[in-house]
Image (cartoon, rainbow, N blue to C red; front, side, top):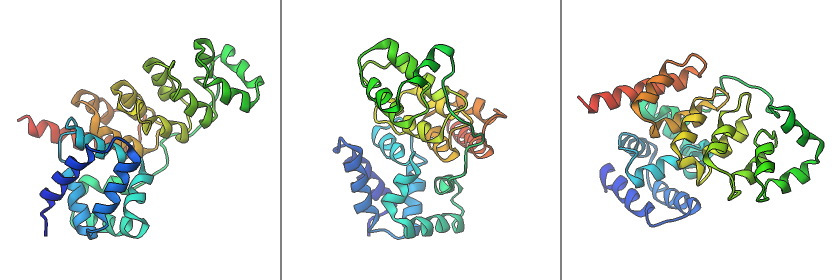
Amino acid sequence: MQSIEAIVESLLKDVLTLPERKMQVELLKRRLSLQGPEEIARILERLYTMDSSIEGVRRLKSIFVDPDSLIEVLGEVKYRLTYLSAVEMGIKRITHLFTNLPPHKRGVRGYSTEEEAKMEFITLGERRSLAKLNDKDTIDRLLSDPDPVVIKNLLSNPRITETEVVKIASQRPNSAEILKLVATHQKWSKRYPVIKAIVLNPYTPPRIATGLLEFLLAQDLKRISEDRTLHPQVKMCALQLLKEKEGKNT
């Protein structure tokens, strides 16, 4: 039987050969289907103690930012059993991956300026189509749109910039669905300012925010751990990660 270390190293090596997230998820499903709940908990524990700057580690952790991905990989039964195993073995490092608490704040997303609000008089179908166009002024007006499909189209628009995506991620109030779209987008979820904006938004679901903490620097983890507007789970996980980073540097 392979050791946990060998299984993780094999996953890290093989995930680098697969360019698409769907293919990476299928790889994880195949490999982890061969393991029991305790072994999976240990595999995740090993993965989440590794440096996120390593490309293979980053790819695997990025998949698990989306709570639905972990359920898809393990299946609902093994998902629950793995969580119970982690709790029984005292592996606190990964238990937050198996919780899906509501956002610290909830609200209705909407247009933030009078100029942008003019878009409300355009039909939803038209706004969804406009979001695909190569027009900077239209993109600017749609950044606060409450419809997830409009935002999804904007995120894939080649004309949109990182600054504009950060604006989407920073908007308060915001919808959990839109924040999840940004947090799991293949391109924008890799950008540091975007990641930080999502985590610092109290409207972000805690499970997504804690998954993204893995990619933040110590100074930002410290800020998050002290931010009273954020969910207690996010603050607690940030503090835990900060202590781990400081421990490695001593």
